[in-house]
Length: 446
Image (tube, rainbow, N blue to C red; front, side, top):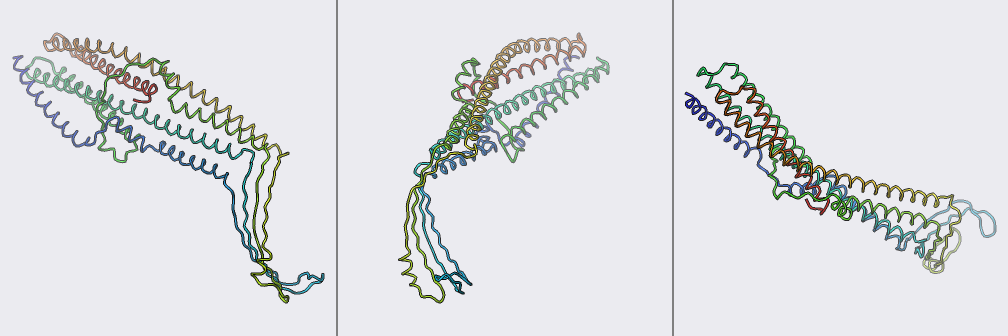
């Protein structure tokens, strides 16, 4: 009788599993038409992330600042022209007043060349170049940040998906057990309460499967939003390629990160820019020398009086001038002194910011290292615990099938096996994430 019941149950379960797999395969083809690898996700995020785009725009702005600073070395050339009229009483050459209308036409051109401006222009160029270098490193740091965020979000999806697969396996086990209990009840081998407990357990397992499915979907949405995708309905990712990476020593990673980390490079660039800014402010103490030259002419008429022709006056009134002007700062209301002090305060602030960035990087690397070591140890322990729990569950299921164990004992063994599997999965992905973070800080590659 037992063999007949088991045969009937197995046939029903196999049909149900085949139906579930068929539906799952069809829904997978429909929902996840577009799969992305980790590389494609990172490349797309770096190209489309708004923070990265903002930093890229800052580079263009900084390049224009360098060009503007260099243009201060160029001379200024300007031209002018004017026309004026005077109508009414005016003073004559005889020192009397008379009604006269006058017209005056004039033009001119000027040329100014900064010969020496207290090294201000040279220092402004150096400051602009230092700012450009800083912005370039900030752009690279923004790409690093989005890369780490994508890796974290990507692994979160894989972690939730694997938990969902475990939950689906539990649903299959509970479905099988419910079918078996139903057959036993029909044969009069068990009380009805056992069937009700099996139905309750199946409902709980289905709820857990629904929860893990929603968690997986939400993790996919988070990743898609991180990539700035417009259409996330058909978005899915592939499994992670590559071998498991070793755990790198924290001190070695930190020493290498000091040379390649773009956040620290940007912070060092801000220190250099602050030093240049001090020099720019100090240039206000230095005298300035410039060369000036120009040409011009005019045409003048008075009603009631004879006057030379336009061409004659333009020729006779044509004039040229040139000369040098020297400006020596003596007292400017402490403006230059205050500018220098503000620049020095900013220099101190940039040094403190760099030290803070160093400390945060060191803490991040240390945390990643110890989390990786912990995850590795937990992964090893979880493998042993999972194997033991699975064996215990198989033994308990045999006892339960023979009627030598209660339903509660069976569910406890199954839940323990499920828990150890979930812990093993969590430790596995935690190890992958932390080792990749360490490798990224060590080499700049993930």
